Amino acid sequence: MDCEEVMLTVRIASAERALLRELARGHGADMSDVAADGLIDVVPSLHVLPVLPVRPEPAVLPVAPGGGAGVGAASGPGDAGVLRLLRVLARPAPCAVTLWLPAPVADLLPLVGERITAVTGSRVGPASAALSAALRYWLAGDPRQLSAGLALLHRQGSPGLAAQRLDVAA
Image 1 (cartoon, one colour):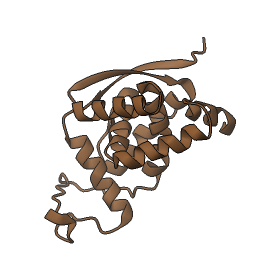
Image 2 (image 1 turned 30 degrees about the vertical axis):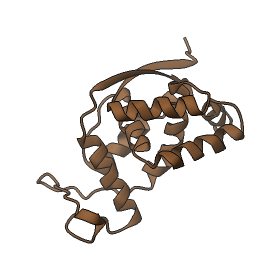
Image 3 (image 1 turned 90 degrees about the vertical axis):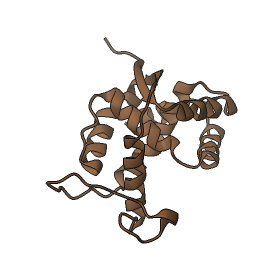
Image 4 (image 1 turned 90 degrees about the horizontal axis):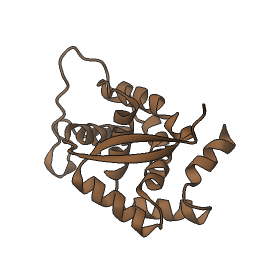
């Protein structure tokens, strides 16, 4: 039996949940639609992040104050994204949020999880954990840019456009 939508419970921080609600309210969509659009937005970003080299000891990535060129500072544009992803994954995520995703978007989650594992060296687990990690990574961006990206996406069509784009591309 094919399902049109898949229900997943994700874990995010309370500030991330508040931002997700604010973005949804500001664009006349629900949190599930915004999460689906955000996932479609973040998948290409994850694809261009460099893979961390495998090390026998755990990698410690201290960041120099002010973003200088100290130990652990990003040396390239992709390195900054890896550091942001690692910071997001290291923060606790105490809030559970249930989201409904279009099936084609949910089908991306195993690939997203594999990519996050390749980039960070840490297995993220089931599809809901991959969605949590990708959603938190997306929400860690500049809120004004997230809102502008959603506005552009919704100007080109209706809320939930991400699922329609996937059906056409598939």
